[in-house]
Image (tube, rainbow, N blue to C red):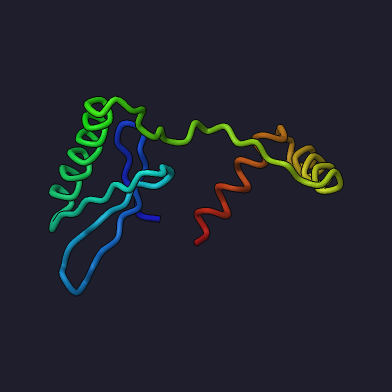
Length: 111
């Protein structure tokens, strides 16, 4: 995935060939933040400005901005799968957390 981060916010980057413009959307928050630019430099600047504006607007309006994901994930799986995951982690010589994080990273980056 083509992405950018700023102040902990992650954005997915796209290219519109019809208009010859890069555009991005911040992921992982309920609010909608988008930005664009004809060059990578313009895109980066607009992304930074969009996040800074979002944070300033939240402060001005008196509400808490959506925060990027913390990195903590609560996951519920059937006990049998839990056991299989634990066995796979032990087989690989990893902690359960490390094995799950590595496996999820591989899956996400395979798309």
